[in-house]
Length: 255
Image 1 (cartoon, one colour):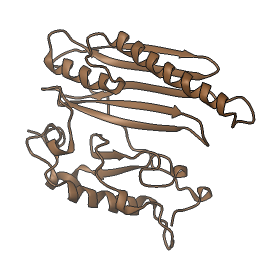
Image 2 (cartoon, rainbow, N blue to C red):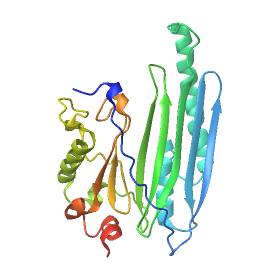
Image 3 (cartoon, rainbow, N blue to C red):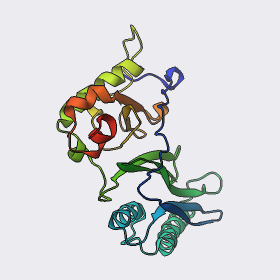
Image 4 (tube, rainbow, N blue to C red):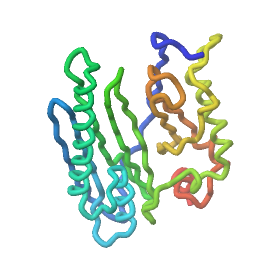
């Protein structure tokens, strides 16, 4: 069983990654945006991307990030955002008109919403971290909001995945389940906040100077009222499951 919303536990806030400048190169960042709104929809898209000419790693990062907006390449981010916005406008206009036709709303149909922002979170010698914050409302009781983290190897520009830095993903999943019990299960309670079968190493993670942080989305492992849970695993607890050649291991324990 799940706790009722009135018994919602507090979600511990992790220490976020420190902003560390990489002395080997200086990268500038440019923010692109596109948006529009009327009584039918609210659309806001924004992307902060690295700018560095003739650097294949940076180009790889840009291309992967712009994939969030279904962009085929990152050569022209502004045009890509505007194109994505126009596609969403068409979809939302059709949805809004259908709501009017169906006549199921006591008042005027609600304003539909699609917003997404890519932000540079932190960088160090080994990798760079970006966060995608997205909200959506398509009618119904409530909208949704989620955060996805994307970590990139600075030497290649490839996204760091669990396959690239972990040697035993199932062991880390067990650590996450233990972390959930410690953080959220109330002492002497007969209720469970989460369905432990759904707690896995889900690919949505980032790193702090001493921890691996996993982020879960709304409804992913618990009821909506529990929001977006985060679980922290200390670097020493996961050390034995790390690939020693990965940038993550080098970041925490040296080369």
